[in-house]
Image 1: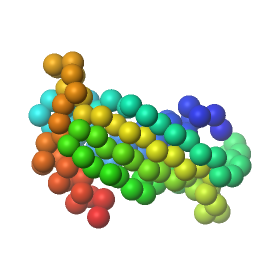
Image 2: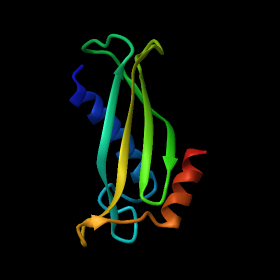
Image 3: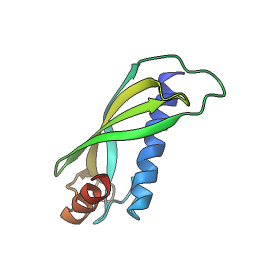
Image 4: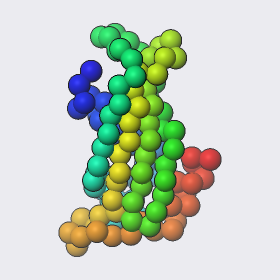
Length: 114
């Protein structure tokens, strides 16, 4: 599995999380979305075509201007094949500058993750 595939898996699980909150990566509320600043992929085992993968968000460190996600990917036998992380920065796409996440969004995110 290439790095780009791992990052797509991470993005999809984030999109699913955001959709469960009725927000998106483009607008988490108050016109502020996210932009990815950093990403890491750590391979822990082999993956093969046809494997059924489970992608989990295992931790989110929340700040006013950033979200640090940690992920793990398991195969159908429960073996960890990937770990990774992404740092997302609050970004106001209308103003084209760094923004701040609303307290409402951060509180809703905390509720869903606990």
